[in-house]
Image 1 (cartoon, rainbow, N blue to C red):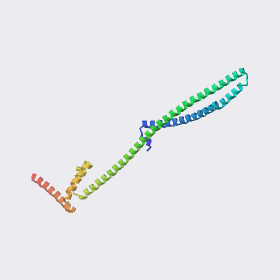
Image 2: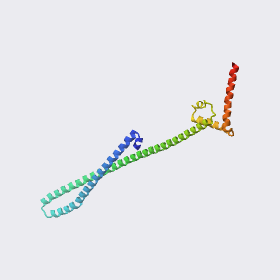
Image 3: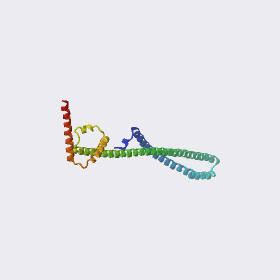
Image 4: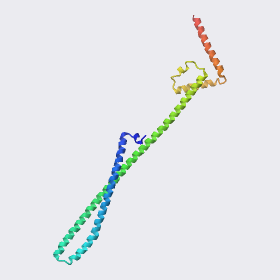
Length: 228
């Protein structure tokens, strides 16, 4: 039997939802991590451009400014300032995107951890159900074995009683509606009584019972004759 079949419909739906969430969160985590790596690379590239190329260019501009006219110097300075401001703005934007992406990655990791914990909880519940089913199966097997043993004992005792040939013809009808517990009590009492006559053999008991039956018939016949 499929272990999932032991869960309620609501539990199965919850487990399926958790599995879907884990797959979705895992994919989002991979995507966010990939975006983070890309932004880190872009950030490093811009930082390298800012700290190396622009500083070197600044030195070049300073050197050039010393060699050109005031008008050209002012124009080139403005261009350089604009270029530097654009790069710095780009670096700031990359840093902002990087922080947002990093926060998103952390949030996704927390959600994935929560979903994983929920899944572990349902797996534990599933394991508990399986263990309980196995335990019930063992108990049922023991009960079936005990039932067979008691049935065999009843058949054995019934055979012994029939072999004695000492019971009246209506004996089985009398005890037919008795429960197993009541029958065993009656058998215990009968066995206790039989132990008192363990020295008497079966033939003697048969004769005794035959004479007793004949005596009872004669007594009844005499009573009928007396009444007649």
